[in-house]
Image 1: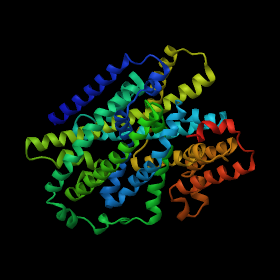
Image 2: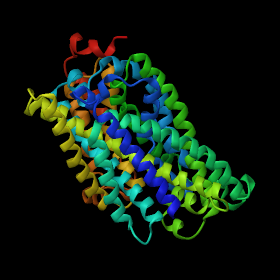
Image 3: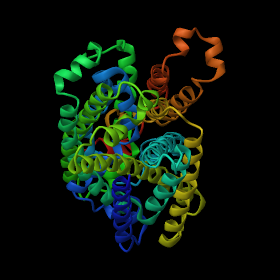
Image 4: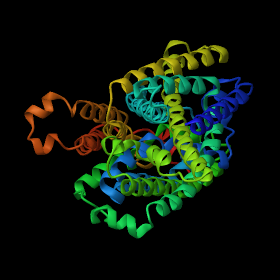
Amino acid sequence: MTLYAVVLAIIVLTLLTVSLARVSKVKTKADYLVAGRSLPAFVLVFTLLSSWIGSGSLLGGAENAYKHGFAALWQGGGGWAGLALIYFIAPRARKFAQFTIPDLLEARYNQTARVLGVIAVLFTYTAITSYQFIGGGDILHLIFPGNITAVQGRWVIAAFVILFTAIAGMSSVAYMDVAIGLLTTFTMIAALPVLIHQAGGWSAVHVALPATHFQVLGDFTLIQGLELFLPTCLLMLGNQSMYQKFFSAKSEADATKAVGGWIVGTVILESIIVAIAVVGSALFPTGDVHDHPREILAYTGLHGLHGSPILMLLGALLVGAIFAKIISTANNYLFSPSTNLVNDIFVRYLKPEAGNKQILLVSRLMVIALGGWALYQALHTESVLKKSLYAYTIYSAALTPVILAAFYWKRATAWAAVASIGTGTFVTVFWDSDFIHTRLPRIVSERDAIFPALIASLLCLVIVSFATPRPSEEKLRPFLEG
């Protein structure tokens, strides 16, 4: 395991070097929160790609692919559909050019929408960060099984992520993502054909697996497919981390160009992740990974690429790329809610006169505090797939409808947004409660929360909008022009 340890050490040192190199450039609130609005399209592509593809794809999506085959792409496909629509949203978001989604919610709606937006983001993003810690801990345990348990690994990953994120904020996160994105893209593209060869060719993979692994729906029902598709699509459309990257762009043109590269990169990488997991299920149908299928990608890198020094190096790079991708996604989703607490609570309500030095100090303290909360969740969660769908659903139901309405529906009103955000969050959080399970038929209560939460949120948005006065032209102008 020395080779794997060396690769991980090089990755960690590289990321730390990138973070430290950006510290001197962080002098103001805008530098820390949105990289001084200076990110070019090339950097935006990789930071968007790295923030989107993390443990949800590398663990949850891969687990789905190991069990169900290419039908797991219903989850990734939701993101692709969202991306196609984002192409038209990106320039409007950059033109608005604030710091966070709650900034947008207050400007378009009111202060109550802003506060509820902060709550929804905190629930969602710390949950997403928590399962990155789980994924990183799994990899450390796989590489050092006699020295680090999976739980101890979560502590180690949390420490890395909190340190990297706190150092230089968005600038640190974005430029680390360039290095990680390049490593991951080229390593996975190189690894897939080699693994297919190791499995005896594509025909051998077909023979080894059920026919449903290669069908559009596989062994899913259409409803199950949509339960994977919708939360991912709607999270993509309203994702604060994504909008924050658009706010960080040099220009509206850079934001639009970045989405094109992001679409191509996401389709390629998510398809390769699923394909590697499917090949891995043919190579390793039994054993430890059968009981822990979320580890299939790292397990395949450790045990599927061997026989020569070059293959072993490729395996080590694949494991290292997965590890780095998880770190990157954790950085993005830990950094984003910390900006909410600083910008939307501390500066907005507690100390509006705070200077840049004080804001930077509080920002770093918030990263540490939220990192601790995410670690607590990681220590009390086992299913990455279930946790990811829970996180996606909160955001999809609570925030995405009102964010899209802000840009595209003039009739949406402030109190409709408040009702929509509050209802979407409430239904998602309490859907798994004993109250629901004991009072609703099992066929209903066992469904994912996305349909009831989204329907309730949309009904509130539409009904309350028509029951309350239209918003003023002044409110609408920054969102509906251009």
